[in-house]
Amino acid sequence: MDLDFTGKVAFVTGGSKGIGKSIIETLVACGANVGVMVRGKEELDAIVGELNAQGRGRALALAGMSRASMTSQMQSAERHRSSAACTLRSTTPGFAGRAGLLHETGPRNWRAIMGINLDGVGYAMMVEFEEMLKVGGGSIVNIASVGAHTILKHNPVYTASKHALLGLTKGTASDYAEHAIRINTVSPGVIRTPLTMAEGQKDVTGRLAARIPQRRLAEPEEVAGTVAFVLSDLSSYTTGTDIVVDGAFLLRE
Image 1 (cartoon, rainbow, N blue to C red):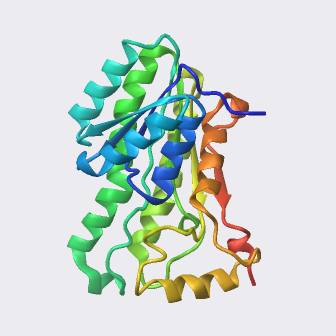
Image 2: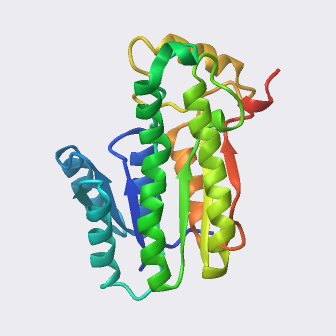
Image 3: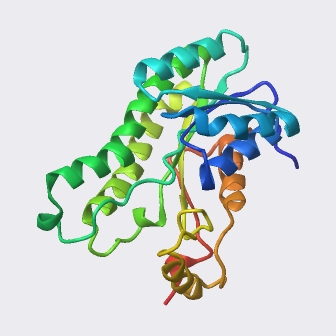
């Protein structure tokens, strides 16, 4: 069964490459009208042009990720749509920050990681809830990580931020369920992206891939397909849930 997002409005925060870009491509291919929010609009212009030439839906690059900017963009979109918004908040690629013991990395590292991995998600959800309540519901997917289920050694702040994201998702899913708003997370494992395949990182990625039971890295599209399914009406009774996309990485010996 093909996913059909025709007439739906999606917002993706972050997405110029890797998993985020693939999510945008998938939603547009399924017919969604996607507003892509980033701090720098220029890097998305070529991507948006390419998507609009191929997809059933439309993509629009939206500069700025402040609360005021997000509110304005969502209100503008909803004035032209009769159906409830389908909203995605993507935190990929996330931010791991400095490695080390907690007392060594310091408060600045703490604030930087929490600002990107947790604060940004919470602020975006505040805007999304306000607008979704006006249109009668919606669906949100936050991008977490397998790090939300285990630890990243010598990086307790990153670990804390991802575990907290699951708590935020579950808490809001319960609170907003009666308003027809679903909130879930998708937790990717080791994915083939420009970040994981960059010089200086490829060797580490290769060693991790050898430990994955499926014996390969995931492609960004495999995460994007799961995100699209969770956003869609096919998962209409699913909320407060985390879906791990890791090739059994967490189950390895």
